[in-house]
Length: 111
Image (cartoon, rainbow, N blue to C red; front, side, top):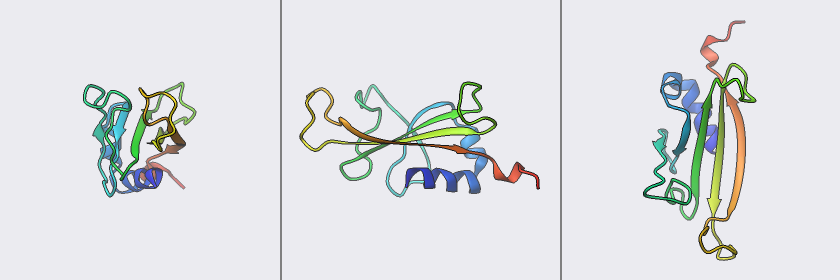
């Protein structure tokens, strides 16, 4: 769902995404805006639980020559969770899923 939320943001308000700095952001449940990750407050992942027991974090990389998304913005959505089976007590959110996508300003695409 995180990638779909970002696609919708890009379609309806590309300038919002284009004005964001490269980096990590938090995307809470039902939200359509990104908040900056705070590693001082949440040292493990930069975000607090923001979807029930899960943490959803977005990594944004815009128009980087090293990016796999040429002429577009690369977004990586991570979802972290804990189930009490994490071996390292310092990393209670040891489980994760990662989904990567490329976003473009479709209003600038010519036919």
